[in-house]
Image (cartoon, rainbow, N blue to C red; front, side, top):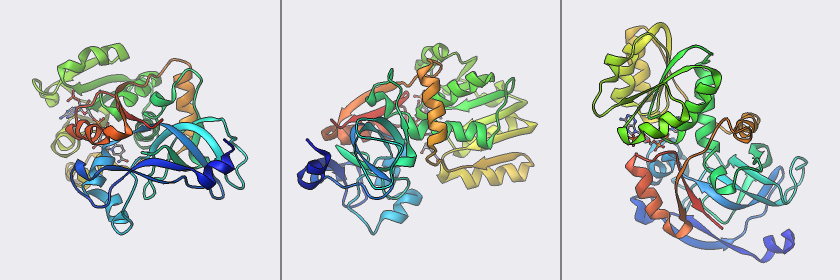
Length: 326
Ligand SMILES: NC(=O)c1ccc[n+]([C@@H]2O[C@H](COP(=O)([O-])OP(=O)(O)OC[C@H]3O[C@@H](n4cnc5c(N)ncnc54)[C@H](OP(=O)(O)O)[C@@H]3O)[C@@H](O)[C@H]2O)c1
């Protein structure tokens, strides 16, 4: 089918919610396929990655909910991987047929939980041939968050000692691999069922947070990457060296953790991740070279989106969850 026919006559299935609430507000509906505007492309989505912000926003929590509350119904999803099927005016970097992935529509547009999605061309990276488009959907937001936290905020260097909380999760398993690749000594908190998974990634030490208090095992750290937040973030401050830095990722508790750090006279920062195709390309190269792997724990169909959110919300996913939107 010509892409122009597709945009004029075609419809697509996508997930929406009309109000904030529990996962039963998620439903699949049909709408016309959108058309790409200037600088945009239309992507036939193969995989849409899930991220904790998806369920938090669905519940009406966090900064995105405030921005979208008057524009419901809304289609969630910031991670898309698929094939370019149409390009808007002024797009010179991509052509139909390109296999792409990206953090799209962030933060107010969303739209990845769909058979087709609009993306800014400049947010997309080419997917390495070795990587299938379902696994690729697990990469953008989580990997970019890990990258920005480690290298832009914490400025992690070779030989430094880093503690990564929740190292087996979406952001965590990328952070572990990036930190190892950079030559850091990597300590991770996780439950024991993730020990072998993390050992295979090359982690130096795994602390089972159910049985062991990490503050008794860690001291003089150069960097803590806090992917849990709250009390875990605050208690981690005592493990830092004088020049150490903590980056706390969950936005809901970031102010609390940063205030506690100020009171103790140590450095801590919150952050908000953002699309960045330049570094996504660099991450794609690491994947292409076999230096970084994407772990997808489970794949769901669009119709199974409620079950996917149930697992996501449980907070114990290993790696990523992806919707297969084909
Ligand atoms: N600021 C931003 O821009 C930004 C960007 C991305 C993510 N985030 C936030 O960062 C957090 C992490 O995101 P994510 O995508 O990595 O989440 P995720 O994939 O859902 O994290 C799941 C992992 O957390 C681990 N876990 C749960 N409780 C733990 C604890 N007390 N100690 C150690 N590990 C624990 C689980 O391991 P076990 O099964 O072994 O317990 C599981 O592997 C979320 O709150 C998310 O909303 C913020």
